[in-house]
Length: 209
Image (cartoon, rainbow, N blue to C red; front, top):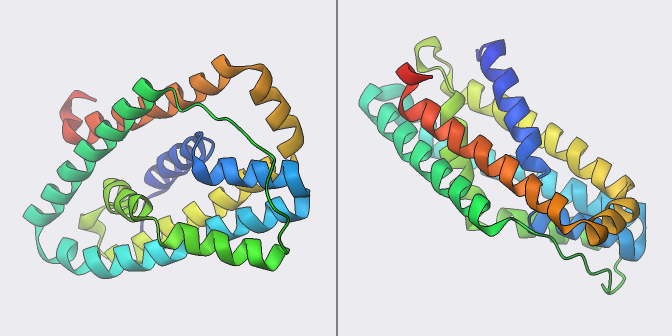
């Protein structure tokens, strides 16, 4: 079973990343501004629950390999660390700015929910992120790799739902704040980029951290 310290670090990092400006959270916020809280919550639930599919594929693709080979486990962690550093650098360079536009066509909540799940599941960047992010918090020596990944995946889904749900409920206020403060939204991306780089460096050179 995954240790509480690893789970706590995973949870803190996940919350920061959930609030990082990106197309998913932007869509949730824009839906709220255009159509109300119920529509925004439907989008939030869809994006969050879609992560269960990525968790399943990560378990199927990685658990047997990680459990059978210490070398493979190390290679996966190092490759993932490099990818996280790359993402962090891109966030720092881009500023991750948001430009909310509330001019969306009105849709039924069930349609928004289905579309959000599909958008999440079909996004290859999310799948690649899971393959890079989750192994960094696994403890191979404790065994039960599949259970550890399922725990991480479930935690990630719950935290994403809570984070996106709060954005959905406050979408109007958040949208007005973002329009007023482009510097603040840029700082959110910078914080998340720094977290990813630090996490990647910590896992690539654990003896220095």
